[in-house]
Length: 471
Figure 1 (tube, helix red, strand yellow):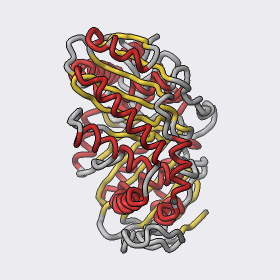
Figure 2 (cartoon, rainbow, N blue to C red):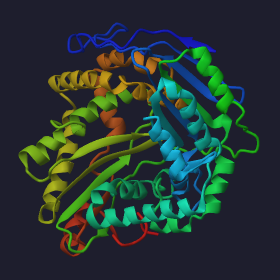
Figure 3 (cartoon, one colour):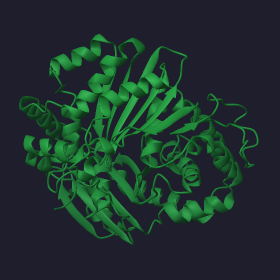
């Protein structure tokens, strides 16, 4: 058992002295005290008492996620996560939802690349009920055939509708599939129209039997409770969940970075806009340089006044918005730039995006830009770990990635310590050169095909193809 001591979240003088390092850096945030231990079956637990309101938030994470989807049946984990909210234990779908709503609580489940997550929030008086519902969802899901057909049909229809009306919501799926070709990170978490049709209820049941077990479980609870009592409740509700016979937790190896350029053109006849995504392999959640990388991304494409948004939206009027992001997984995920523009301005928008990327590499960040990014990040951080739910989610993320409280407690010191050399290293290490990019374009191929050949070898597919990358 490990007990971690801290003080309540405090945010003071965050803008002063950001250029100096040290454990006592201004803008410091510390996690409240929490207790960490394991249940009898190996499940990892973190409990944080917080008695300011009669509320409790809980996050349950099971390692594995979509990495465990059978080949050709991507979306299995996602369907499972949807289905466990449609009846569990002694309650069918309607009774399960009614039990949550009658308590005024919330419960949601979802699948990620490397994990399944269930989150719940509720009043103290409803603790026993909500713990039972979470336990039932994970240990005793009904996996009803009728509900499965509804969930699968809705998932397929949602993808088709997005392709028809708003491809911007899918550009990241195409980007990951094109960037990580042949790598597990390139498989769509939610599946595609082909893979979802291939998934049967037996596949979901097999996923449940093989991929869920107590020794993969992480539980974090934050709120108005007594630690000893909550520990007993969790041991009773989850501690007997067996771990024998479970499959090995799937894990991905690092993906190679793209050298040169390759272009995927997804033909959407009649489109009046071109949706574009440019990216390469980025950085992991535990990268030691993650703070410097985030500071650079804040300036480059992570806020409204970023370099990208200033040039393409505010000055150029080429888009309603453009941003860049780092998808941080156990291994480096994607660094991606995403936006859309009028069809006739496709080249102008992409050329300017590449110019801004070149400028980042040529000029790095000047001192005022770095200071501004530090102030911005210090200001954005405390509200992100303020509520019970945010704290429970952060604790679960820390346990999942093997991080301790220093991930939060040393945040301000890490921000303050980033200097010009660290910025330069972050740019060179993570932000791709404009010559090394995986590029995805969704638009009217008849109008832009010849104009986008200059960006690299072009591979084409149709928006109606039931996958996110060429077969």
